Length: 275
Image 1 (tube, helix red, strand yellow):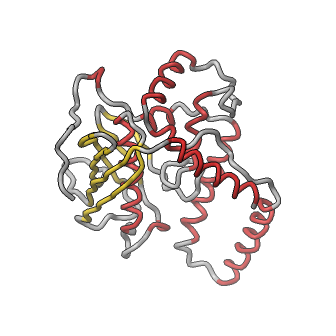
Image 2: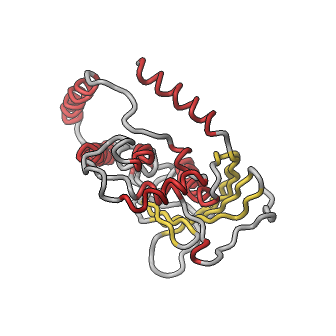
Image 3: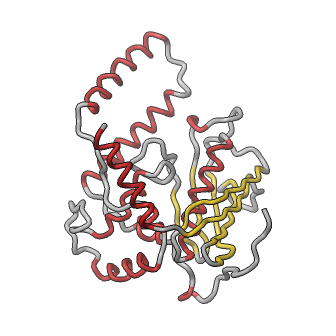
């Protein structure tokens, strides 16, 4: 992949630094009672998955556990299904409209009731989809989860991968490393102020990425030219001192039509509602 040079993004003054709408908006998502229970359920399921993929239980113990889970799964199968959030991810990804939306909401914190779970009661619910992300979603049991924050003009992520993400013995599967870079750089490209979807993702694996150890990801914008948004990222151990790069990535995002994404979302919701 050639290095893009036009339109390089610099740090600039503090007031001019780009803001990741995904991170700033998701951080304002209210921990309503229902959301807290969804997150607690997902956390318990993560613990179950960790034990399941590394258990040395006997056949009888496994059989007993499987019977219990069959009962739980049957109970959930009887419950209604459908979308549990408002908004959609790429609409909250970036864009001047979302920046203005956040600015309008800046002085309205605390106005919505703590139990509010709709856009009408709490406009920050547009960011609720991120709670179901397979990488940062606290309500998704498949999520490790990764915790993102913005530091100046960079996005920093922290994560510890458990046994379920194993590829080579004791190491994170390379596919998960690639996917977590996609999530990191997706949050990073939202600092461009333009909505974009991944067009190309390149990964260089420098060293094995260990399981069960805190990791630190860092992403930054490299350039923005027309519809093209370039971002780069690195993965290291999250430890004191200078740590070697475990993997690095470069990605190209292309600005898209929000209307087309809305069509995809509507099609998804139609399939879920009809299942």
